[in-house]
Image 1 (cartoon, rainbow, N blue to C red):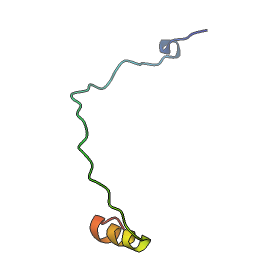
Image 2 (tube, helix red, strand yellow):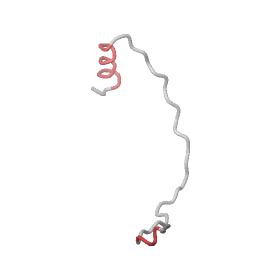
Image 3 (cartoon, rainbow, N blue to C red):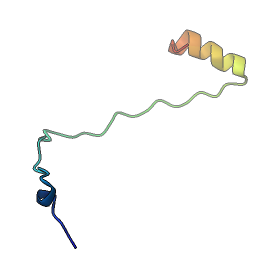
Length: 50
């Protein structure tokens, strides 16, 4: 038994209009660290995360 969205009173017409799309910018290369301490230091001082 197939039912349509209208059978449930659901309105499925589009409400958004896509104006334009574009690819995201490129990502920077990652950085390898030698220790957890170096990672924490970089997160605190360079990235400002911690």
